[in-house]
Structure formats: C-alpha cells, structure tokens
Length: 170
Ligand SMILES: [Zn+2]
Ligand SMILES: [Zn+2]
Image 1 (cartoon, rainbow, N blue to C red):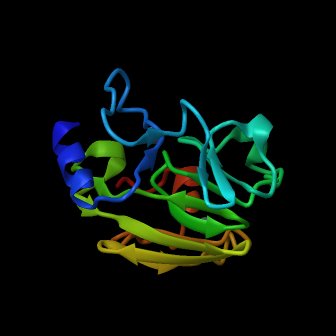
Image 2: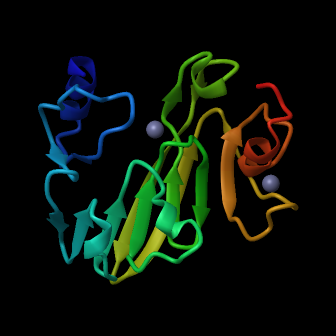
Image 3: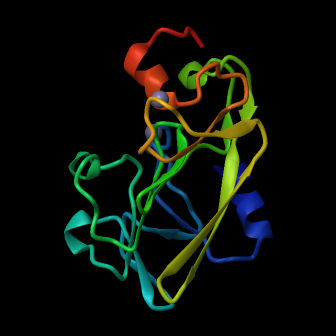
C-alpha cells in the first residue's frame, strides 16, 4: 500500500477509489474513498450507492451489481472491475486490470493490462483504452456484449465464452 501511494502521489491529481477484494483490512491513507462518501466532480457525482443513482451520477462498484447485469443502470456511467474483463458496453465500463501476477486469477503469465481516459463533456462520454498485453476484440457468439480487452494469448475473442465453458485451461 505504501509503495502504491508513493506512485499515486507523484501525479499530484485528485485520487478516488473503491477497495478491491484483496485490499481487505488495508486502509488507503491518501485520496478519496467512494465507499465512505460521494464526491462531486464538476456537475457529476461519484457514488458507490445504487439507491442514489440518477443521470448525474457515476456509479463506481468493485463488483458489477447483480441488479444491473440485465437491467440498465440509470446512471450517467457505470464503472466496475473485479472480473478482469476489460470491456465497454451500454454505459458500462469494466475497467479490467492494470496488472495481473502469474497464476493469479488464471493468468498464465504476468500481464500488464490497461488504463483508461474517460472524458465527460456536457453528458457526452468519450472513452480511450490504453492497453499493453491486451488486444481489443468483439465476439461472434456475443455480438451485443460490447468490446472486450483480453490477454493477447487468448484463443477465444471473448472472456464470456471462457467463463461460460471453462474449457480452456489458462
Ligand atoms: Zn475483485
Ligand atoms: Zn463470446
């Protein structure tokens, strides 16, 4: 955590976060925790609470909330992670991962993932994905499931296929 904070401080930018499932019990000493309170950024609000959402809110969860798997979220934008699928669909962005160590979550080698630039201008959202060891893909079997950012060595074009079938032993 200390190492991480040193890196983040160098940017001298506001820093907002939610915890991941491996951060339990480790308190981040810097930045603004979206799980503790909402944070206003210009005319938008970062929130972690699904009961507060409306079109001015950017919902940020660690997990994709089960309620919004099928139902469309009524937020301006929905950011989440957890499952290591970089992905853009609807107004959702699964942020994927920045780094994945060997053997963690099925990675067969250490991977540098991606980071995102997200610009919001009068409600219009522009998204740029910047990847290292990932490739952009769409899936013929999941044509309406958006754009994926998957490890370059995946044989399938979609991580939903991998999740559904468990056939590939990565
Ligand atoms: Zn997680
Ligand atoms: Zn697929």
